[in-house]
Amino acid sequence: SLPPVIAIDGPSASGKGSVAERVAKQFDFHYLDSGALYRLLAYAAHTQHVAWSDATSLAAIAAGMDIRFAGGEVYLNGGQASAQIRTEHMGKGASEVAVHPQVRTALLQTQRNFRQAPGLVGDGRDIGSVIFPDAVLKVFLTAAVETRAQRRYEQLIARGEFADYNIILEDLRQRDLRDSQRASAPLKQLPDAILVDTTHMNITQAVDMIVTAFNKVA
Ligand code: C5P
Image (cartoon, rainbow, N blue to C red; front, side, top):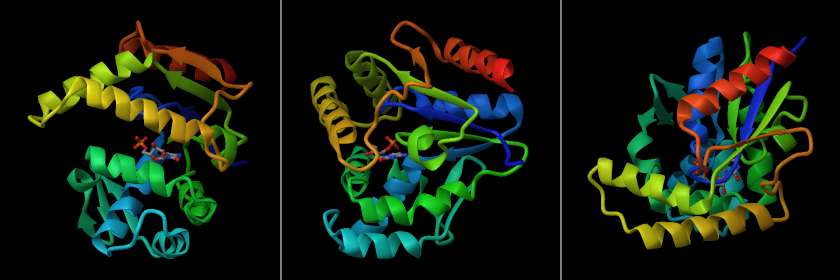
């Protein structure tokens, strides 16, 4: 039988990445940061002067991307791309390229290839709905938009980058809308997903909830 999948979906800046990575570590599972794929595509398109609205060209680029994760870094066609894709600009680009069904189809198999023994933790928007609908555990990880904006703000400041709380809040609201109202694989809480609201919870508590839930179903 196929290795088990824990699907963690939720809005931007909900802490999915940190939580998913730690859950994966707990079980020695592989980890798929699906948002990184959309960010890499936005970045690749940007360097090739392809518009984020050009679905056909984007799908062709997506089909040719060689993506590797190693040691917490991401590599595109052999070159390190971590810093380049972690910007607010590429986050916005990711959410723009991600609306095209052709793009989502082009990245589908890439994501499914990450399902390897002994198991996988995947985070994104449609991991439980489209990529791995047979995930043994589905989590909807979220937090109030103001809390997410505050956390993103602190992250940027800690990295020594410019940050304006109100701009971040407005960006997150727009991204939430774009991600949840698009026709293709919109973000939504699935009926079979457990809700983990981290508005008043730290990372450790969120990880513990998910680990406990997985131990019950595994
Ligand atoms: O999770 P992250 O912020 O890196 O994702 C960037 C953007 O990529 C999201 O705002 C969303 O539009 C898109 N995305 C998606 N499906 C996924 C993961 C990310 O549409 N599974």
